[in-house]
Length: 175
Figure (cartoon, rainbow, N blue to C red):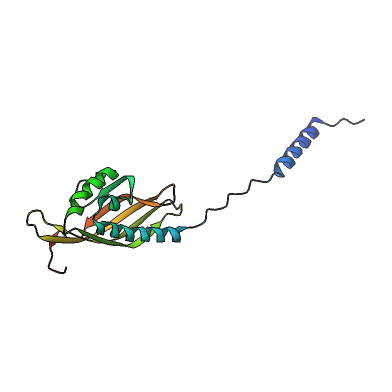
């Protein structure tokens, strides 16, 4: 009787192992998340429109509602306001000004492929009262808002950054 050689046993074992592992199917890849960027863009666009309306009410709590709790606001000629309480505190004097007005609209909105962060970029027009002269003054500028998607699916401003295109200047009636 022939005895199988150890090499034959080794070959058989390797073949069995190869067949056993080769026949297992890899788990299916998770389905990609749906691309909701168009819906998110519209939600952010609508949110900025509502934000302008909230500023028009001159109610700081309404205007600050768009900010995340740990947001930062960096505005021209103003120290950084870190956190919603500081932003709210910084808004109160501005929104109490009879000449206060802030109008803006995004010219560009980008949503990350991941769907959890976005930014808007646009122009703003700001009107206030010059504390030295008591006259109505205004300026135009540019802004970038960085948004973070919240666990409830809403978008909140994480970083509010504005730059002036022109310094504050006296406004003519109707301007």
